Length: 495
Image 1: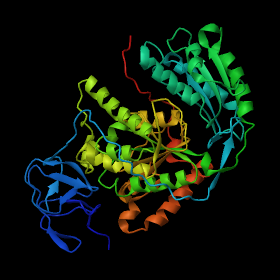
Image 2 (image 1 turned 30 degrees about the horizontal axis):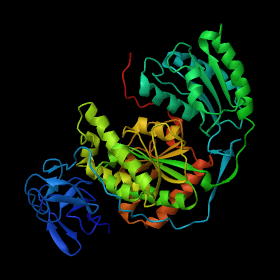
Image 3 (image 1 turned 180 degrees about the horizontal axis):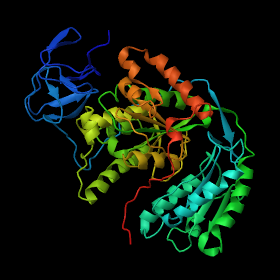
Image 4 (image 1 turned 135 degrees about the vertical axis):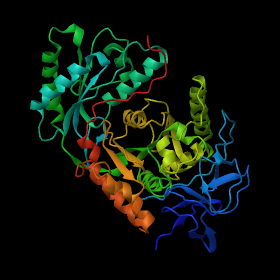
């Protein structure tokens, strides 16, 4: 029979209710009997002993805040009696503590090998505007180019956004780096870059950060230079589709995969089921020579020392400190508190403080060492686990993962979300009720771990599932929804 409460770590003084608990109900933590005081919703925390005011609330073996009132054993532990311990910028010490992944023989998937040796899991033709002014033209080109699609092209799609002009300094550079990352993405067999001509981030500026490109794969159309930009663009699209259509799926080792890790709309089960499942996947892919990217810097606050200790070198530790403190400065520069997260949906699902959320979120990265730290828009440079600078916002962070080279994103959720982004996004539910309620949104259910399913068995099933998505044998639920819009991180003045 599944337990009614789940104690995650032996040091914890709270447990998570696996189901709704009623006043006076008796539950057990090991051999200890606890009487429930008041009602406790599923996914929320119950005090395992009396917790005096000022004492730490311990979950995952670490403090997630402090008690602001005396909390009797059996009581609901949440926002009404807990406050965050988070502060501003901190000093950290490097105490290396990581686990080398146990080597596994590489698995394989069927992908599209590009001329530069990278592998795409989809073969699409992308239309990327440099500026929001040409979004409408980009959509028209997308619609009229469908006649050039053949059986090897998965889709022809335009990605629209409102930026590219009236941005200053570093803010404009963020947009250019992001767009360059998409132009270079291996899931795109070919790309049309559509500019206006007078924008700050014009085609000439984009080329400065784009690096080398294959003229057969990437074409540029500057609308103000043309009498009929749509007609000219369609001629270029015909060439691009002919080039992209020449690629076919071939067997590739799993080391060719770069996977982005993301969570959103978390609940009290996310750190028990879905996020540890991704952690297992992450370690296994790294052991096979693949790459994974962990982002959402604000959702590292409170768990950052654990990630810092997993840095392979002192240099990466220093970069991680700059990553964390730099994002805290971003918050305070605009007069915002660093502990504003979790969101209302997170709180309703049982997440009390940002430390609570972060300690659950960072489990997606498994236990492998941190090999690299990437700034927003930078491409993945190393195999293994990389940390990426990006906010917690679902759309912005997911698009950032794609722009850094993730061919696929694994997205855990306890609340559900239908959004899509430029690359296939697998939605993993933390609880079975969500997967049953939203079958059109959820791809894979990790909630069965609460019902007693063996962890290794589910890990095997999930790894197989991801390889099938990568091979094009399974399409994610969000693939069938609208994914035209890009969400780009903005930090600066708009003229």
